[in-house]
Length: 112
Length: 97
Image (tube, rainbow over all chains, first blue to last red; front, top):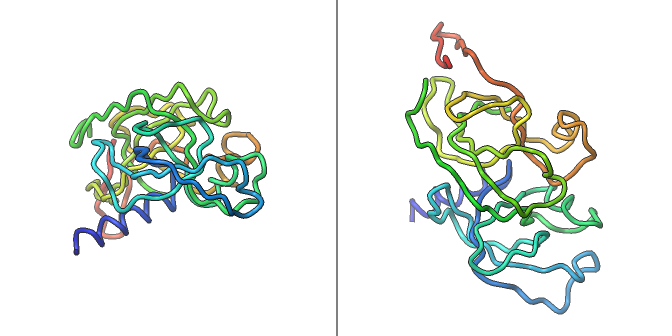
C-alpha cells in the first residue's frame, strides 16, 4: 500500500509538472460528454517510467496523434493538455502528443 | 524551476505540430547535492543540453511560450539552462558539471 501511495504521488508530481511517458492500454467510449470533447478520441493510458515500468494508476487521455492500443507515447498534463486541441477551452488534463519511436536511457551515475 | 539531470532522449516521428523541430530529452529531478530524486519526465531542449548534463527546467506554460518564442501550446517543460555549479548555505558546492 505504501508503495502504491508513493507511486501515485510520484505520478501526480510528474503529470502535474511536465510531459511524461505512457503506454496505451485501451479506448474509452463516452456518447454523452461536454461540448468541447465531442469528436475527440479518448484512450486509456498507463503512465510508465523510462524502463516502461508502470507508475500509478491508468488515466484517460485525449489523443491528438492517432495513437493506438499498445503504442508507447508521451503525454502532456495540466492546463497545457487542452492547448493540444483546436478548441483550447476544454476540460482536459492529459493529452497524447507524440508516439515514441525510441527512448534512449543512459542510466544513472554517468558523467559528473 | 527545477534542478534536473539529462538521462536520455526521446525520438518521436509522429507528434503534435507544436513539437516540430524541438529535441525532447528525458530528465530526472536531482537534489542540490546531486542525488537523484524520484521523478523522471520529458522536457524540450532550448540550450543544446546533452545526456549527463545538469540542467534547469522551467515547467510553466506561459514562460515556456516566451522561451520558445512560440504561441502558447501543449508544451509544459523546457530546459532553460545548463548548470555549472550550485552553492548551498552551508558552503557546500553541491552540483558541479
